[in-house]
Image 1 (cartoon, rainbow, N blue to C red):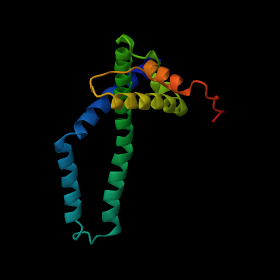
Image 2: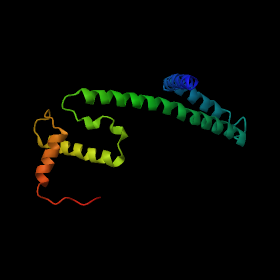
Image 3: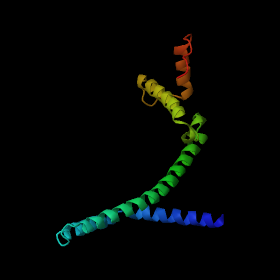
Image 4: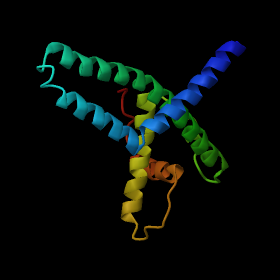
Length: 156
């Protein structure tokens, strides 16, 4: 297990360094120079199949490998952001704890929560004071008051 963890840590470090490096202007300039050199050599090689295959193969391999490196970095960054947001929700008085670990919910559950937030937007739009805040519970009470006495809708 320790060997696997060491490999994971090395891969994380490598992927972060590569992702950081290729996001720099000089990396773009290197790629641009490679393309210009390739294009300039076209007449020398008669724009042949081998000449085209060189750029196609090179760019395909680089793209294929970069997908995994960038995804590793994105996964780690996303998880860190989720944890930070979870901490803010957990530590904020009045914040709804149902948003902690919201990314683990199903698409249908997220749609339901999104509907609640749309209700909050409507409450905020009706207020003249843009600094006024509303809670999910307030939106739910307003919704319950509007729908009191109506028959329950059937399953979707």
